[in-house]
Amino acid sequence: MRSTGIRRTLVALGVGALTLTACGSDGDRAADGKTRITVNCMPPRSAEVDRRFFEEDVAAFERKNPDIDVVPHDAFPCQDPKTFDAKLAGGQMEDVFYTYFTDARHVVDIKQAADLTPYVKELKSYGTIQRQLRDIYTVDGRIYGVPRTGYSMGLVYHRQLFERAGLDPDRPPTTWPEVRAAAKRIAALGGGTVGYADYSAQNQGGWHFTAELYSRGGDVVTPDGKKAAVDSPEGRAVLRTLHDMRWTDGSMGGKQLLVINDVQQMMGAGKLGMYLAAPDNIPILVKEKGAEYEDLALAPMPGGRATLIGGDGYMFHRKASPEQIRAGLKWLDHMFLTPGDGFLGDYARAKKNDAPVGLPEPRLFTGAADARDQQVKKDHANVPVENYRAFLDGNQDLEMRIEPPQAQQLYSVLDGVVSAVLTKEDADIGRLLEDASAKIDGILARG
Image (cartoon, rainbow, N blue to C red; front, side, top):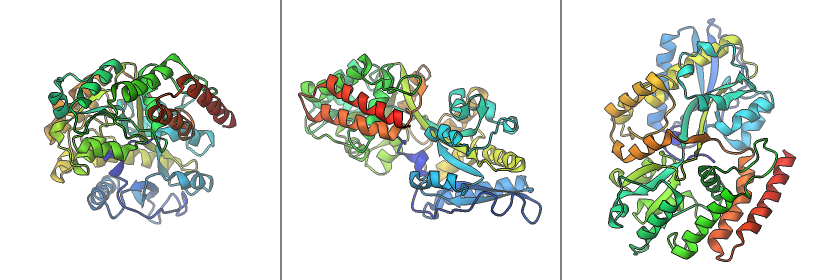
């Protein structure tokens, strides 16, 4: 599932034209002898500020590299699932193209990605990127892509409601029993206040079930990816906790079959204590749902085992020439991978344009590069960074886990499990997981 928030909407605001220019259709050499590369994920014209930033950064890159011509293409969204495979199969993908983490293996399997292994040493920033993120684009020891952003799930909570319920907002829950206890106290405030909310429709229930399962050390599929693994003690614990909060404690409210917008509306209105989300939800809650930055805080995933991560990066067309690959890697370094600078990292520019600076993610780098990025972010912060301290500190100890194979199909199956538990007090958890396992096995067997 894709995180819905500021980092995605930076390049997904408004409707831009989907340009189907074939890779190398104009040749990898322009008439003036320059190396030409087509790139996608340019913000649409309706996203005026982001469009201007992108154009400024491309122009600055071309000034520094007068032998390279960058031809950017609008995209909304950056990757459209309805056209993505067709563009790949038809040879219509740009030379440097955007992908979600979950697509990397698929693109490699269908042999549509260039092998970057011989060239990646020329990417100055590559060694500074978190290894767990780099590994997403590494298949059988070969490198096929470069991460651009990453996010991980955590617990968004309302500090004011915590205080009203007699809870310490500087010590958020770290275990699922603590989440349950805090939710019960918050719901006891009355007035329609809900302690904890979760999604259970439009595949989003399956997405959150996966995140909660990971947090307890469980998995959706077996290590070889061939069989379901949801019917486990961890899977049953996830559903039992949701069932008991919903029906025994009454801390999840009466309205169910919620999706992300419903839950964001509740949090923005000050009627919800906690829900699972990535940091990029916070500016949406403020700018679109009526919340205040001071009231919102973020903790790591309860459970202490693992967190579901997502994000995106760039891969290269399988027919890209060595010159285009080298040019594209230089462009990635300039645009996205220089700590504290570029399209996503120029925090001074972002602050001047009223964009939030100081959110704990994306956190792409390690070591000195991370320290540099975090310091520049801190210098220009315009949000209460201490409200995210628990998330920053606690996330370092969690395993990062990406979504399972064929995630959307599996989420559709798991949606039914979660929605049944939240809408039927007598739901048979064991039977639900047995049935879901059989369906998942069938999906995996079909490939």
